[in-house]
Length: 454
Ligand SMILES: [Zn+2]
Image 1 (cartoon, rainbow, N blue to C red):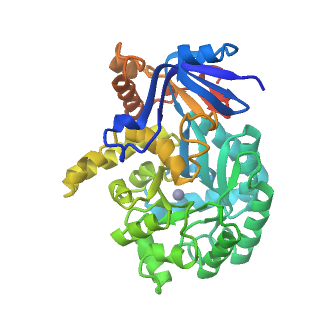
Image 2 (tube, rainbow, N blue to C red; image 1 turned 30 degrees about the horizontal axis):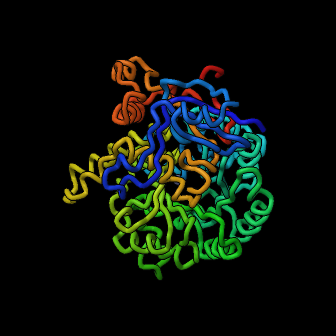
Image 3 (cartoon, rainbow, N blue to C red; image 1 turned 60 degrees about the vertical axis):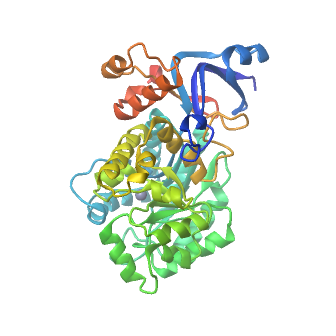
């Protein structure tokens, strides 16, 4: 395949800004940069004049004046809830019964699942997300539909059959069994894991909904497939936590339920993790496990505030998730808006003043969370997360003047003026998000979303 390229202001994270001392050292900023790729992989990045001299055969797509950042990496959401997003007035457990399970039941039907999978990826790409880890439903059709569409698009996608078998926690017609969860997962792993850019995630929904037998089956899958990711939920809501401790009286805390079943290891990604003790954070860090910060969902469902400074303290990898439909958006830029506010509220209310700087979600920290940080939480940082040579050409072109307000706020302070200007504009896109900010989304170098051809 011939080489392709784009030209614009390139901004990506090359290190963890929380660890960099001066966070500006954690980014690469190329005011007039060119990115070249071939066969879906990046082969060059640098100042335009240098790269064009070295690659005289490329004719870059011109996005001069626009901000180009790595594609966003969403580590936690539920594609099957795309049609019930923004449902009013309930916290987690009631919200699941009233809105979620009735909708997810429809995914027994393959054509329904196909329809929603198509819609979901279309919206996701329009939000600039190029990697996604999603839950499905208890029905194999829901996973098949997801992976078929992901493979057709060539997008990096993780998903798995989502087990829930405990009586009384979901409608009988929705629940699976430990055996059907195991057998179904096994079949889907063989069929889809490693096909295109598809990765299978072992997905027991949460300890609230799974019996010991089902979690044992999840553990069996995990030991048979030591490299597979595992996704679930952890300590999202006080009522949920209380029930989990009643269901598993032999466990001292929520995390121990997953530990006992052999699930907590590298590539284990626990959604939310809001009410964790110091000891739970410490064990997550020691085991190389990850958590998903889902601020849009945590605010929308009134769940609580995740404390990333504590995760950082124990070296716990964490990524960002919109957690649609618990989150009222599929956009990680909008999710960062809520993430920023979650941090600011803790600056005000916490007695942990020394953490103030860590809790202020600057543009650079936010960009890291949505890209390289999320990639690290999935252990995919060697393939995605920034614009390094050798990684997938997954990136998004952002229009920093997409609305009247953004344009006025920007003035003549274009991203190419300075790193500070680029950061100021990126922060503006988070806080004043409108759908038009995403101009184009590229996955493996293919432009899968183009604002001009909607
Ligand atoms: Zn979730």
